[in-house]
Image (tube, rainbow, N blue to C red; front, side, top):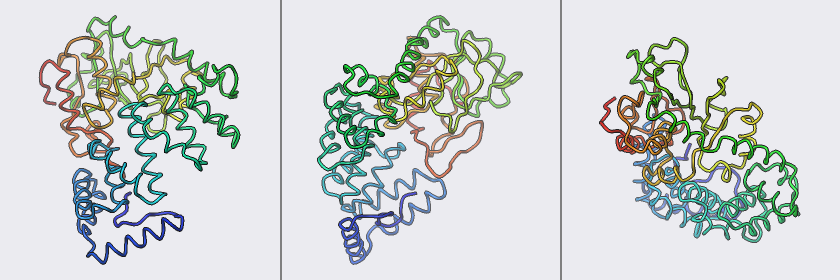
Length: 408
């Protein structure tokens, strides 16, 4: 949870600690501007009123515009669709350039990750020189910089970093899971030998087996398909048999399709889910089911991409990754991370080539998700963090994909 007052938690270097002490003293001497909004933010956040809390935090920053810790807190809201990217970037850039060293490094990492995810590797490469500055000793940061450079097409820079890490801590190279970086190094005439290269090749070969399978299944269905989300609008409507009557049925995450389910049906042909099993366990999948893994640019951006994808190889599950270009278009439209249900619907509509009819779309209840929280099967999920999805923007995007307005 974000702190209420402008202090930095954890252990700091002397320079950072003295800077923060001086800043806090000045803040109190100036009458603690924005203090009421900061307290309001904390109270609203604890109540799960995330949008209102974000607004209070932004008001606090208006009252204290030069507080780098508060700037970082506000910029972090962009991760959850509660602050436009255009507002977050200048805050992060200011902290990187003028903030105390520890906070500046945190802001730099956040800025690079945000740009890489939302705008692509080439946009993030603007900050590459700062990531690899002289004196940087964190192998984690240097490996991320190498993966970024590789994704942006700067192979030589990526390999130079790998060699630098290999000289200082070879074990860091042998444990990394950046899939395409591993493959690129393995293809570089054997100059950098990574023991996980064969595993990476096997995963890449498995992915290639099912390349374009999603498009093929959509085309084969000739439009006779059902896209089924997990919202509460299907409750007590007994549409299970209608859903299962379609040639192709697409579902998402922890869907509740089951044998003899009168409301939801039982068939699944394409299952959109995240790569890891933390919140969404792996189920027994029938032969022929395609698992589509969500996550923007898993092959390049995910430090554990190899480890995440290997279980699907070992289980011989047909998998495909959501195209990075699709994520880019959706980030631009939503200014937030898209939900799995909207990703699947958008990709389906794009391949069908025309807007989908209400008779093809089930269980989307985006109008229930209006306060940065999520409703699945009528349940309200808050937890300690807001949803990463901008539900109001998703509702507008959703209706742009459908031929008629769906109210529930």
